[in-house]
Length: 136
Image (cartoon, rainbow, N blue to C red; front, side, top):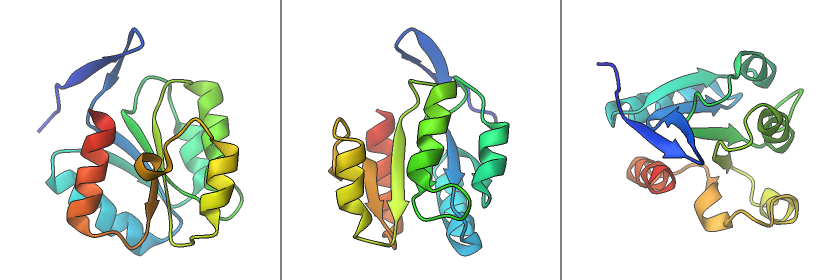
């Protein structure tokens, strides 16, 4: 079912329920995509960050869900490159490694770590609630 929800974000229209998910773990992609789609989100999922960057379009996504630890481009670097294309898209970083929390806080002091940083594994209900909170 096509989504017609649109929100205004700094005078730009972007799909409210379209999410770009990038994680190099196929199992994580499969589960996150399935759960988010079951909750009404449209999810474009990539296991290769370079492909995600190549296909990335401005004003197309309501949220980026980016794994931090990936080959070729880590999630922080990928986000910086995507921000050069779309400087308004919100992001939420996902990782299984606690040691990235400090790097996140140093790299993005303007982002609230409790809102924009998700530890894996995350309970399914918590993931959906977390995404819904960011997209409000």
